[in-house]
Image (tube, rainbow, N blue to C red):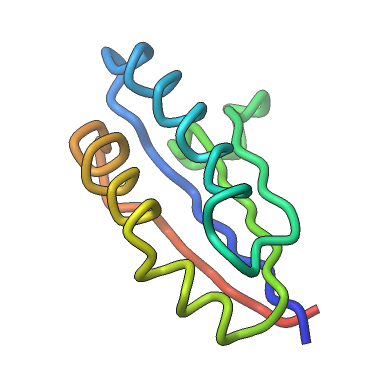
Length: 99
């Protein structure tokens, strides 16, 4: 059964260049990590209801085992380590469900 992986992120206000680099590197994961069906990333346009979260990542994967591959894949780990975590204002909120 396919899995939808959703991550809500709060980036530091001064990290716009870093967010652009993260965007590019996140989108590139689709061709590098097996099991990704679709991937999107972008900023919110409804700040009044986002509770401070500035961006969302949505990844559709073929199944739960593909989520485990994605989570530990070196390309994904590199994006998280180099582009995301250093620029977070607060910890992200992640959620996964079958669809």
